[in-house]
Image (tube, rainbow, N blue to C red; front, side, top):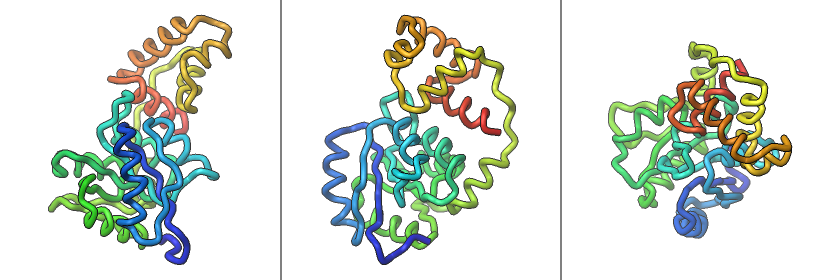
Length: 222
């Protein structure tokens, strides 16, 4: 349960800068006693910030349709495998039933319609008290601690063996570095870094680079 006697620190992940700007203005109005402490358009950046003790918010609200090759479900699973305390609240402009079961499986604590202020206020109120929020009948969300425990104990196959260079590239990408920065650090061409990263994606049987990073990071920590 979060402390009800201090401002609730909320972070927001959304790929649309206009939506972010609007939510920064509206969330404190919709949710009494809250403040937006940071926003980002990048799923991997959100994961990095949430796992940094100095930047971890009380609640992360995350859009489930991102454009940076990272799905909200992947971000949710990656963060929840690392953190057992911080509630994760998914939000979408699409039908809630399309995402609810998958988001619950990925470790979130609730799902809301992005434009429904009453639903958002109610959901965050429940999460603040240590509960969960499901807008879809028959879909149950776990608490943060229970979801974390389920994910870290779920049987996983070990990821395929990557080369030292491929492993290092995925590690650096997971920390928010870009291809050009990694190429500069390695003293090689950016195209070479991209090639090795794409090779790692294929080895991990991933559909996207961010999915490969999630597979690699969570697998490497087992």
